[in-house]
Image (tube, rainbow, N blue to C red; front, side, top):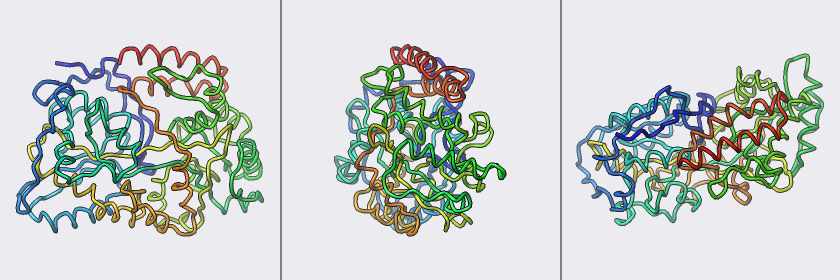
Length: 447
């Protein structure tokens, strides 16, 4: 028996039902006990250099498979995909299992420990190494060799993200970058002009504080921080010229990285954002969808949360403000097949179909996500023509990959535990970040 998570330190942030996540980023919640996985029997990563089990499915293959996802906002587009898939494979019945992001990874760990994972399921960057290295995922090598999946169709950074020890496991489903979702009505009510074009940290801080002051009687704010690194502090760390992790070492002790953290401390101190406690009780996306937040730092995936809402026609996307440099985080979800699936051939057929231009075009047309397949992304921008969704595509020019390691969950938990002290002003940012760097380096040394 192999204890996969000996520290059992898991982070419980990121995608809520409103902001499902890109796709998106943290691991799961603390389980109290480590998850024991049997590396033998399903192939450890060392054994996975083989192409894996793969042969193209016959069109009359009969099977029942499960597809595990975490974003209910994407189900309509997924069902369109499955309808098209069933035109080719009419006898493969696909059940879509939606688990809210906050519970998704806990459930996945339980399923992994008993080899009852969904036949096909979503995975993200912080978790791919963990599940692949413990033999829980089937490589896509065979499908690539057969020409049924072509990695050249997807952003190279995402293909690399889902390649562990030179073995490919995941097919990028979509990608996301970060922008600022702005409520035009709140800008107008506050009498603050809507920013246009490129802008600076100082301009953002002033805009947020001015809106908060103007709308204080309503309990509204100009901006908001929070504990989701992908949408907030990772971006400002990169914009300050810092790093989160580099060459297996934490970047939190560097002055540049600490400047990226200080951005959010200053925003809260100047009343440009709710307090960390307020953001713990009600996340930034919820402040925004309730009409109490003028500017929400959010991913392109947030588009689906605005569908058929009152906000949909009153929102515009702004590029992130620029610090020492322009930067945003890029990430994306991948579809992976369980190595223990009893219907592996059917699951791989669905995996290959969802990797196709046809399926990804359907995803883009639905406006739920930016599909990863090259040439299908423009449909996403057209799904909300007045909102300037092009910002998320333009961000590819200055995007930096989401920081991950083999067991990101451990140091993600340290971020969640320690950074609130710095954001709230309870402890100086330098002291907070130095302590985080020390604990993070100790964890990285154990990977």
